[in-house]
Image: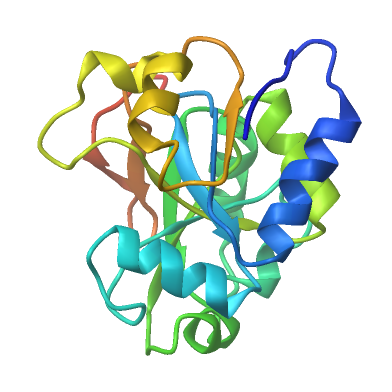
Length: 204
């Protein structure tokens, strides 16, 4: 299914259709504030296994980001973080950033691994936020782009539909996306540092 959702006048009926797919363990494609992304219900093992399969990885080896709608349930998925790190998150989220944080034991259970770190995202995109709110827990996600390239079609919902229609049951057209990925900031070490430059810019 290919549906168009206006990010400034969101049709909740379509949001709930997407969430129904997520709860069934299906993969969806949705817009973020950077590139379009694949996503599944973080709490659905079937969905996680399917998403890992799409990446050609085993679940205990794959690195997905967790998309949240706010910082209120952060402690469910991360170990306790210090005040400067929390201030950094509050300053730049929602926004085009992925923050690498120390993972909680819950994350290890979810991914069947001894994962020590987890990427947290809160995109500045109304559609994404409404999806997570309606689902009731975070979405596990990975960008459409390959690690070594971002092709033009990744920004065009219709081109995405043509490529992935036979692989993904629900694709959301939220308008043209960006061709830049999120900026990744590692907050696990003593001092935060940029792992990957992307759309997000840190204030100097």
